[in-house]
Length: 422
Image 1 (cartoon, one colour):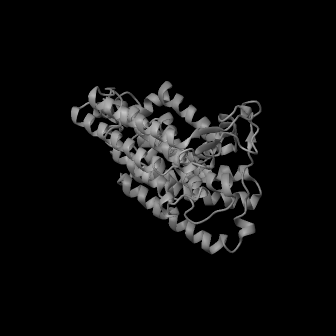
Image 2 (image 1 turned 90 degrees about the horizontal axis):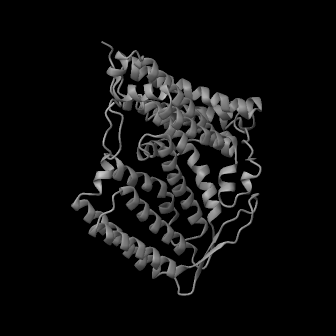
Image 3 (image 1 turned 90 degrees about the vertical axis):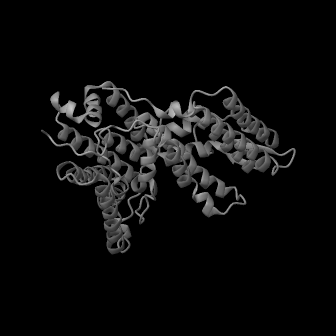
């Protein structure tokens, strides 16, 4: 199987792009110094809390930094890396994106926390929790598109699964059964998408769009017709409790974030590791990738292309169903209309940004989860920024990522292409 060259690594090394990236970093550094630095009073400190009041982790001192000096240092880092890149070049665009993101976000946080106390540990923990449905949506996309089935209906699958989960859990008073129903629901809806795309060769985008419309319509109807009138009987399931892992939960900073969560967050972490191993270290993963890259060659080797596509699409639906359950029985314990709020689409962006790999998709999901958590924390600090603009942060990040990354990832060669056996 021919290895595709990763265009994103070549992107930063042309002379023109070196100039563009260098200027961008210098401009960001200047903005950090002029806007954030000049709006912080001399002598003010920014305090970042590194402990949660209700966590089991060992207490460590808060991080206190001089606000204006820290902002100017971050500005110098951005400007210095930009100048270095223009003069000598930096091999990886990922490094440039990392420097750009870190310096701007860090400066923003220091500016926001100047003269105040900001619980950084709370935002780290919240980022992982908020990344959970995004990561599950991204994993659904990865496993489906690796066999060349595009699934943009993840949003609809998650929405329907969220509703069936809460109804089943409320009626039976059993959260585990509700979780099982959500997974089965995801499998059934994904099976519908698979039949339309694989058997009837419907355009994958059209099929996925239809599922999203179906998901919004059917859940709205059921919610207005039944759930709002029978809240205690159909829409009051409660949610999974937090499970604390002994010893590991006592590790400062990462302990509360990783080892004090509910079962759905733990299942997401297990799925990321398991899928990464299975996709790149097993014969099943090799067959999956072969079907997505060269289905004709895979067929000649005895791999049933249709079965692989059906199985992977349905497994992806089960993962999306798990993501849907997070919104209801994994978080608030009830169903609200359109409560997925575009997380399925953000998951697709995380999949692309993660280059169609489970670990990459998870890492990207954490970035989106961080952006989501950031807008909530910024509203708490009462910054002089309209709340509507803060709520736009996750979606702006999605647009920026897609604008900067599409064309620089290794998309499966046969993605979205129907296969006809000869």
